Length: 179
Picture 1 (cartoon, one colour):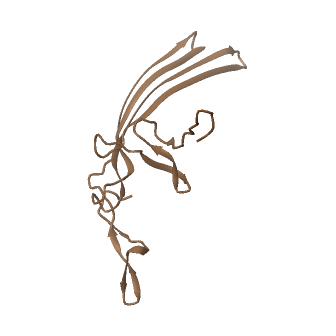
Picture 2 (cartoon, rainbow, N blue to C red; picture 1 turned 60 degrees about the vertical axis):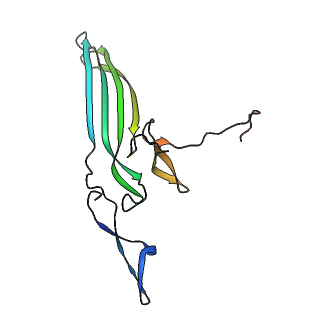
Picture 3 (cartoon, rainbow, N blue to C red; picture 1 turned 135 degrees about the horizontal axis):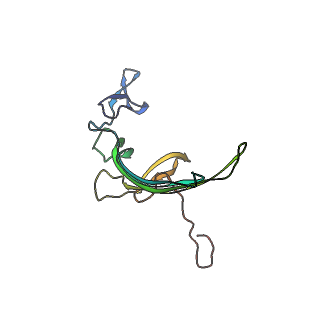
């Protein structure tokens, strides 16, 4: 929670100091980024709402585009670049766009009864455009979410949607048997 402040944290059991026969815990500096800031988003939206026959048929079509930059992400750090091998910093950019469509109809409307029917659909594309602290470099990505056997199941990788599942692709030989 305090990645923007230079703070000290309690060291682990491998970083104790022995004085006589007693081991004492030590404090060490935590990684920090003094220029840490909030993520920023720029969004544009255009839409059309319509209604016909005294709004017995109505709906809308919306298009949006959004770019978020300076995402906060927990990423590996180069040795000697900070006080840890990983830290939370502003490192990523994400772009998304999509179309939303909805239509509503009132096929039956009497004094005592109204029947409303509605349908909506959405298409959205989200893509991570940067996850690197150094431009022009690439990596497998950053694991996020739950893990199984110490291995992350979801990953953030440039060029893909956020929180993709990290799975192996089965490879087969010429006879169709798994390799």
